Image (cartoon, rainbow, N blue to C red; front, side):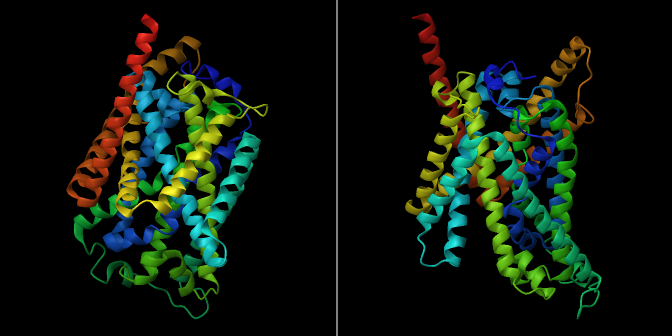
Length: 463
């Protein structure tokens, strides 16, 4: 079944399996935000960052459940953009779709730049632009070759990242209990000492929440990919039931190891938290190993985001909210024009990372910094309005809904309240406030573009 709002979705090949969706969701959320950014959260909140991660994880679990409910009933390449349009009107679908597209395009540039910087550190004589060009070309070819090839590569990328996390957790537990040679049980001296569990108090937990909450972004790729899955309703339901809990375990478990074995203010946690723990365990080559894992994480995210941007652009064009050329599909049933456009703008984003002055680049990155918050809010509002519609449509078909949001509508309202609280925290923080302002400006620009395009469409109809 495909959404009525995306009549052209059946031109895409259903080549993804449940295992692809599951690992894709895991891999998309386990990226540099965990491998590198978790240290910043610990430095901000101390061991109490565990509370920050738990709160952020709970919010993401609830949002993902809402999104999964809608995706299992109406699988579509445009995912939340389609649901926002169905629930709130065409303006919402247009705004959310292009906001997501622009956000991922900027992220693509940052990811491939990060990869180039690490690889040229291994091979100093190689120019960064050569590394970037090679990887951009490689992943363009992979995405053009077919959805199954994309899904299979993403599966193995995610498998490597998950294996790295599991290995880290095993080593960490052995370290905590003093089961490694030359180590003793760590107890709670670091967890509760060094200023206590919450050295910065409740304010530190709140500040830590702002640092860690957006690290969970990327999991929504599962519902975009659902439209190209075999038995999409069942596949997305099965995948999302397990993904969120595993991600929460990986994040909270990894950070718990860090704050148990090292003082929360240890400089090594800020520069490389995973490396710091592995070196404490006496594992040689830990820094080099984690660099490889980070490169894989960035490449996996880049691969998934090329896919996500191309499918969102394809969906928007299919609904008349983008150039019709973006709907062209190859013999392999891949929206090849959308893929190439995404890759082209990824190259532009890489150039921006290298060429623009810091203040202008910072403005662009700030604009996407809190875009995920806008997406989450509109997902919750769309689910709040669509649930009765989906129940009625399921009843008319004589079928039960494949998956339901818990505690509707109260948990949806509670999630919106939590997101409103997050906005309040961002307003109170000067850096986050700048991000909100830049995102608001970006949203305003997209809404203005929609208004202009709506006027043009109306004039074409009347002429």
